Length: 583
Ligand code: AMP
Image: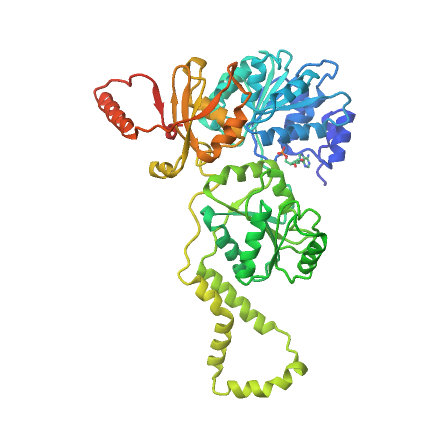
């Protein structure tokens, strides 16, 4: 007996949505959709869903939300909150796809680090569904540009990430602006204590669901990452190539310059490699592509743009020498392998502070990465040796052509025994590897992209001495305790503005009317730029670089005093001083 599989029509969605779903190629609802969609269409009960990316959760809340939208009512009816700009844009885009046949439907994304005026304009046109990051959403509510009194459902997507990124207070404030009788849906990949406390506070008698991920993307592509020190990227690439003698791959770099550098180094080190990038003439490009197609080039080093039209089957490896700036580009890159039923490997070479970016990619593209270890020198030599022996055994002997040369060769090799001969041949081919990998270091660093999520989520787990090595800038911000700023919220503001949890934050000092904080130097100017024109609790933010705090020794001195005071059972005097380690 064949099992009856539910269809989107069975679920009761309207015709416009069914057409959109069909256009997207969704045949059957995923498990979470089967459970969530009918529930949302018929009941006002809250939902807590333990669901990761790849479960189809966006459509699970998006399709019924669109179905229930009254387009004649020009005010927000659904509010979706999510942690990052990237996800916010992705959800809005997916929802626009789902609602593309619904006339007059207006979906607006609002997120930090981008012009607020444009978002205000978009809201003014009458948004039915608003997808936002917490800080920007709250800012817009405060400016009275986003009104939530008609909101019927609020979706908290990636709730765990929102909490770890410092948006707890913003979420409370936003939820406080929504009607009491709304329906709340919370999606989270994990159920931490913090999540449970949020659900207790803001949800009533919720329905609990837990679902597994569906398989998306090319199922025959394996996604792996190597975690190594940033300076060792090139060595890792060499090891990938050396451990896979038959590699036929594309190495993606972020810039044209990097592309040329990597390709040049590879060529100098004796690999069949070349670069393709925007500055080549069409003829040069055709030449490189031709060689790659004929496999005269084994590794093509490319920028994303240059690789756009590249259509080659049988690629064994896609190497992300550097991760792409946008998570969805990863899907394009990895889609170059695993074609036509073949299997392929997509490798990301990352350092410890890129774990969040890998998780972003997982979330946006619905793939799952596994950590792999960079092969050791010994493993590589073993692989190479076997490949060489295999080649010797399988090589096609071209009798008539080599025959004239043989007598002279035999004569020269006469004194060598069979064992000697083998040793000489192997060494001739193999010494290059032996000398390169003699005393080779282990390039792997410990840790994983799933390490408690905190390694890179602003909460600096590195040792204090390591943190001291990070060059920090010290910034002034014109809000403080009086404006309900606390270290957690400040971290939220920073994360939202930079759209990442990657920036390393140092010491935070929240004073009464203003505050100071340290942030790694390279993130300071982007942050100042991103916070320009933003508000916090109605105050236009002003952030600037201030002089570094000189008297380190005074600080140590104060700490000692504090310590003594604490020992005597007294609290601290004056303003609080926070180290990020606590957060
Ligand atoms: P999500 O978990 O929402 O990030 O979705 C993961 C991926 O699954 C997205 O690429 C969706 O387009 C896709 N997807 C969602 N629902 C379905 C479905 N019913 N059938 C096939 N693919 C789906």
